[in-house]
Length: 169
Image (cartoon, rainbow, N blue to C red; front, side, top):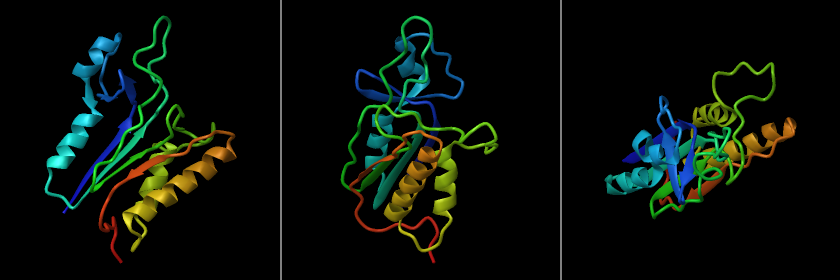
């Protein structure tokens, strides 16, 4: 069996803990993050309790602080690096401190950010194991981001054992 967790939205860290704020979070101070966010480490711990042979967590979250405002910003700069336990694979849409692109320019009308749209396209291809799907996603995101002068390199932490296909042959 397989455990898959996918998150698209803002991401930030507080004291080295990665937080994924709820879509309706109203954050004005760092103290509100734990009550209006999902702690990524908690997701990883939940994944570890699942009787799944492969556990995959995919995060399309800006690793730059999305809550910049006048005065003090909430949380640290982007999501903190993480590790994957045995049997787990974790992928971020951008490297530490990088911004994940939503659009490739003013005429880009896709409802999804760059990483998610590439991921959705790659996962539909039959007969490709998940580790290759994610590496293909990374390569395409890097190429597309560079085409508009932006540096975005999705980070992959892979300790998965065995194979999984989003779409078998």
